[in-house]
Image (cartoon, rainbow, N blue to C red; front, side, top):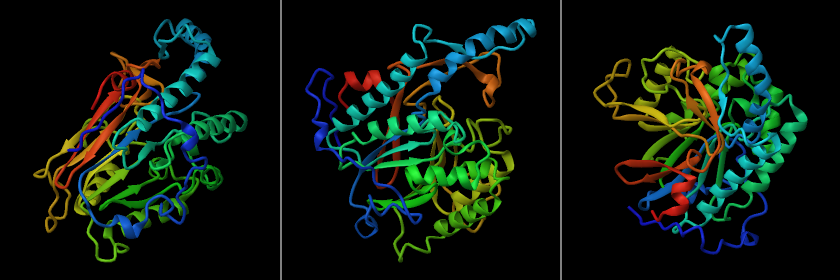
Length: 374
């Protein structure tokens, strides 16, 4: 395991003028602009990457509009209906938005100070809060996201993927094209140092009614990627999935909810991934840390002629605004949201160590990272 050092916050920050002024984008269902296939097919030793999720610029400021609605709903429902509490009441809407931007900027600074640098940074969806039809707010939020993201050091590629806020809860061809114009392909694969990564569009699984043809192409593409037809004989050391929506929150057998995949689709996909040798599925969407394991001896539904090892779903809390669970609500649905908050002790990201025989990971808050050496 490589030693990493994160300088104390008081030390001088790096000069961002040396960093790239233009984001590299995936095209043609690959990310060769950032990861040369020819140079990344061989595993050359341990490395690490950073997983972020839900920068979602604009979420906390949007919740400020819930205050009047909270009181109204409690009144007309005799206290039965409650909206999530605001744990940052001292911030108005504009200040909340600036706080979200600052949290993302702090995350960028921390990554840029890491030595050695990570192989890449991935943001697992909901880059911004405004839906595609909210043109004015979305344009500003996308612009602010890019302004901050372009401050990542030039030798650390940024991998982005779409969430439900980026392309809509019911995506359309138009909303997907809008995303692609700003951030490149909505799904693609890439190799990094002998490991194959599949970036999938989970909204095409969540609700494909308005773009069934695109969803079908997406599924066919996944099958082809898992067959490794384009690997030119190279076998990846690991195969890893990135998506926004997680297949499950805690268990493969849990019921369908807002925050996870439909139960039968979830099991079908996981079995397919396990048969193809996938061992990790990294996600966001939940604005809390969660996830769970399926052990190698739990092979219900898996082709008995194929070996399926341990499989882990890893859900990473937001680098922006996070959700505090409700004690009374359903954790798989919106009723499980007890409160919203943004602060340096609850916002953060995950450091993922990729070794030859295993993958280890740990989530860190912005506050803990700024005070420690890893």
